[in-house]
Image (cartoon, rainbow, N blue to C red; front, side, top):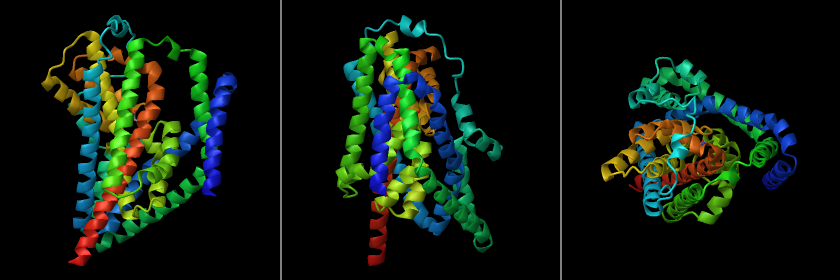
Length: 407
Ligand code: ASP
């Protein structure tokens, strides 16, 4: 069944691209199919995150165990996003793709109306909203993640009387997982429509053709940076988790293709969880690490934030000092986390990084025509990072348990 599904997915990608090129108008007219697929995935994501985190944390019982998985995950996430941003900054400082591009390209760009600057304090406040239901309605993922973790820890500390509450969420999680399995049968149809529409839009607008040399160089550098990010993590999975990176990559391909098609690591989470299961990553680890990593481990996005900010500075002729670049480093990581795995979330949170280096928000307009395609690549990198994170944490967790049993 798995092989048929994989074949169907490949066919749907091929047909999607062919139809997008030859029948663009028809493909755009059926774009609602792709939208429907994304809606169905997103419909499950919020309750899934809540139930997955609550059942994962409570099933671990002992706070000590949760502590070590949590610490491993956080250390990994910090390492992964820091390396990603550093790769981006080194590449941009070396190749300087922005030098020579007319600043008017930024200054003349109409400012995108809906991209309002977000002060850092408001960003922090948004993580702890007064009304969690309202946050859920607005599809704000980070507050839900914080709330789920604290809620689950409270359930564990209350003890016996909280058992019915825990049982309810564990049951709900299983029901949601069953719905995901059903939904996966629709993947080929969803991919066909999503990719077909994207190709059709690009071919109708001829936008990519108007690009400048520097712009193309910037895109190539960014994609190269993502490639390096994928590569060092593949090395890590082989050296630390002792898994065959090729085989890990081929199991991950389902999730990576879904990430590419949906541009959302959140929407891909159900598939990512299935891949982790197939890769033998323990349920305890996968259910805790993956929802958390999907929310905060957006290394591809953090790299995008940093390289874009530096690129704009180069265009405008701003010479960024080392402390200013450290500022970019920190805000890029936070902006990556704020993007929370939604399509083009990184483009919106980029405002935070740009404000930090005094680049006008309208600069984002320069990236808009390319962002949809770049988003697909950084989403793939994000999802790959989440799976590697789960693989590495699972390895350490397993080793820790074995050491513990040996004593
Ligand atoms: N679309 C990305 C993700 O879902 C976030 C972003 O970079 O905009 O991981």
